[in-house]
Image (tube, rainbow, N blue to C red; front, side, top):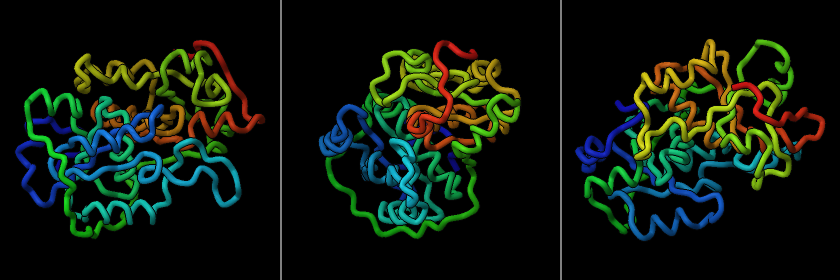
Length: 286
């Protein structure tokens, strides 16, 4: 079972295994059709396509009308139905990949863990690593029988905006923001209406988890990188702009042997939508 990362050569050895399901998670926040267009041109053999906006996210407003962020979690029943349509069953080994160092694939990795499915990994290095090995590509649409995945006890925790608000000014949790340093400081904000970060948050840009070639750093390197930010990882909360790249930090923590941190799904996009919630700017805590 692969539960964090898998290399391109190792994945290539399992392309003909019917229990393995590959999911193309390519996406572009500035061009919402880019991922699907890239998939149509060519993808890993038998891979299905996951749309970040519709498959891996839910309604932006809850039943109470409150804004839940730019990429809120899908409803669990809807997620399970989507996974079944992709042919995923309880015995499936799922591999997610993208073209951005796992930036979007980590979201599917986290979502499957959220509904209790441990056998999910991210292709280390993504499309670039696959193509560097001259491994096969396909433009054919896969034919998948409906899978039978079922929801089981969750392997991932979440916290709400209310939880974080209640913890501010205490040592109850460590908040880690995965956005780029300039956005964390409140500069060059183009995605959300307010710049800044949650007071007391620390910044760990998700791209710092990667080597220059887009593959994840070693467990030792990742552990050393997170050590100055975290005490007990089980008392940590990962967030970002909309709850997507925070999953990259959560994956990196698993690789580093530091499991247990929670996700704030709404992240900054939800937090800053309520003017009553405090906002900090500048470098903050390192």
